[in-house]
Length: 569
Image (spheres, rainbow, N blue to C red):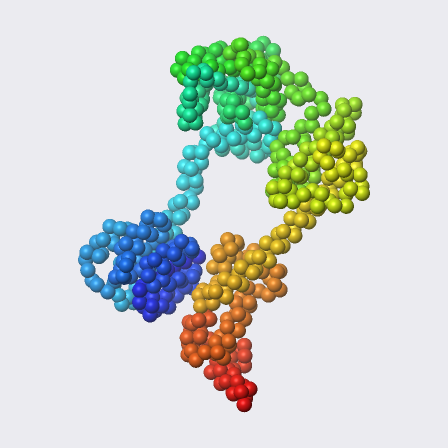
């Protein structure tokens, strides 16, 4: 709910205006009060305030200056100006500075409610526009090239998408490629002449120009999709336009393309690559080498096609003597026998441990061990060591990042054959390695659960401290949740689980205890003690107090004083 701030340098007026606002009827949240512009700005910085009602005539900083400061930092906050002076110049200034409304004091309760209601309605319309589908689509279109590139980069890295999820993304990005299409992958390596010195901005401009040239040339023959890989190589996925539009052999049930068709595509890619190289040298003074990977099927063969092109780059070393290189056909899936694809493809073990997805980490290890079992005679001892090292490295990194040690996590494991040294893996079978890794993951899960419990205890303590310091203010569940940046329902459950008491019950008890303390230790009036403990209505305060202690506040005070006198005598 929208929070409201009342600003007036006269305390009684500010409190009176705040009391006029019927929070439930207007659907607003906490109503804050500030008695100077400086105090108002501090409250705005600490709370998500949507509407400010401020006096104009105030010392040091007046309401107009406060309005300007608010609009400069919180342009969506609505400001209603109040003044006791029917001055046209003030009204004109308020309109020019984009005040939402302008009211004369003393303001009637109905007029104030109407002004706040209009401000809320205006704010609601603005935020609905901001969050509307049309605005979201405008934002999405602005990020479209980056999002398209990220999807292709994921595919080249081996990230797997379900068919439906991939089709949905391709449709969103208006990409012509479809599962089963025949495609071709190109990898472009760039080199600056030694005499050219280019800063980061210059490099970004060169990359942008290079992509534009490539798109302009390749789109004459292909449907073109590009990204940058982790090495800043430019990667293109090309499909013949007619196949991309109508579906490839795998997608539409047509006859598979002949070797002659594939050779014609490779020749077309080479022609475009030669032209691309010439334009890059002529207009950007860049030397480019284009590695043309083998043809394959989208999306399953995108990663092996990329790996084959990357292998060609590695074979060439620091500099290629040619500027167009065919990377050759992949062997099988493009990866050597014995390579544990499931262990190294995204999401990686370190990432899974960092986000606490223990089950997914266990599944990844199981898949890798199953791969080893399915490849008899491919060096399973070395592969088991690879699994051990990869998993241990991920665990070490996770623990060290949080200031812990594996030896502390598994102090009892040394009796079971673990040396504790990452350079000296135990000679375990796949079953033993799986069992050990499972114990490590179980301990990490337990440790994370304990940390979460500690965080929940800290949150409960924070709420208790906040409530004790703000007893005279609104302490709704929403405000408490905003204080610790949590959802109200989730916060309520956590607090009840940690303390055994509901939040509202705790605040009610705290207020009553504080009121009883003030009644026994001060001569403050009953209504003043009620205000200090969050009860603005004196009659309601007396009713709640009587229900709690079986006596009115005055009766309770007299009883306490009689007891004190008897103790003194």
